[in-house]
View (cartoon, rainbow, N blue to C red):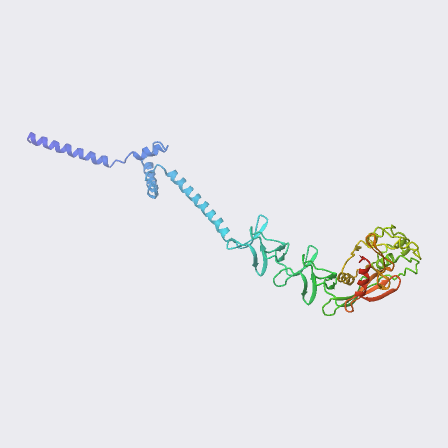
Length: 435
């Protein structure tokens, strides 16, 4: 073999060997995975272990949506946990919102009751399952008891359930009537279930006994509040009520019938009239007429007490002593017997009629036999002094005949037309005392 060929052959052999070494290097596993494992704190590991970790890393890298680096498997897991936690929080929040949005019906919140429809808070009057309720128009809180709406109408909502009440209802000890359809509080005279009642025109409270309505008419309502018709005796007074309207047109009290002459009190017409009225009311304080006369205050001025001696048969000191006691002084005296005593001097005929129908005795100053007044002093302690002054008791009235019933301490009991009575009353200073 020639040298040139030998060198050529040697060159080719070396080239083949070199080529074979390069291929062997290419088939050797990379050591980078061992370095990454070490950086994570694993230390030196076998080839098999490295291979297993590489596969695991490859799996994580494949599912990662971020960097394909396999050095953060634990962070990826934490991220997943956080994402799940956020999701749970979102779901909880969503559930809460959904729960709020799905509130329906009456709901208790912080001790108060509210009404929702599909999560929306309702206010004002609401009909729930056929019953009416009221919810505050600002806060939505359920309302109870008597409530007034924007139109000034009153309603009653049960103080426990909140349901609107209708019909006759006892609220806080008083009876009321709430319209059986609308629930509005009724006032004044109302026909309910065939019976007439009277409810206070301001408060709506049911009224009882003798009542004078705004029309000036007097009626009687029994213990159940029902209007009474026909004839009856109430508290020692005989009444007659129209059988259709229920209006009272007749009243007659059971007053006393003491005659001042019989007991020797010749000048004591005022106090005897008073005493006869106190008998009707049952308020004589268990005192006899003589005891009552003797306890009268005495004064020269009839506005302050009795002027003169009521037992004086001849009235020898007249006209210096008027032998009278006037309304102001007698009213003060009467209050020790009847707290309702009231000086109504100057009152009208209409009021006298109204008070008589209510069973209130009235002491009035007039003249003997209701004749023309004989004035002897026109400036007597602020009034007129009469020589024929007399005082009597109105203890009844008949609206159909326009007559007062009079109990006269001299002439007894009789009916007298109202015009004659008030004429005598006006002629004697218009003095009157209501018991």
